[in-house]
Length: 146
Image (cartoon, rainbow, N blue to C red; front, side):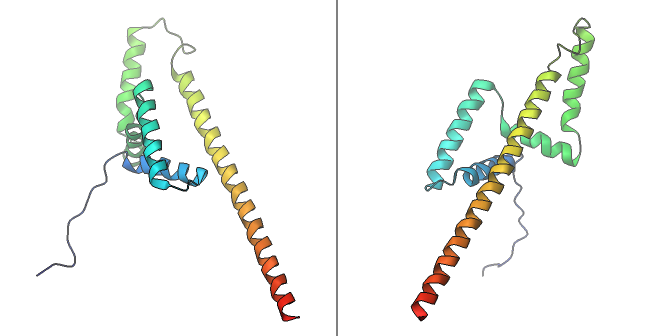
C-alpha cells in the first residue's frame, strides 16, 4: 500500500537558491535556445571565476540569507574587522578594504539597475511586437471578409 502524502520535508541547502536565482536571471537576460547547455556553460564559468577569485556566490548568498533571517552570519566578519583594527592601529579608514566593498556594492547596484532597465526595454519591445502581430491579423481578417 502506498502513502499518497508524506511528512518528509526536504531542506534546501544554503546558497542553492542564490545560485538558481543567478542562473534564472542570466537565462532571462540571454534567452538561450538550449537551456541545459547554457546552464552547464554558466556553471563552468562560475567555477572558473570561483577558482580565480576565491569568491563563492553560494556561500555569499547563504550569508545574505542568514543575515536577513537572524543576522548571525556577519557578526563573525565584524569581529574579525575589529580584531584587525586592534592589531594594526596604523591602518587608516581610507586604507581599509571597506572602500572596495563599497565599490563592489555600487557595481552590484549598477548591474541590478541595468538588468531592470534591459528587462523593461525587452518587455516594451515584446509588447510592441504583439501589437504589430495583432493589427496585421486584424487587417488580414477584415480583408478576408471583404
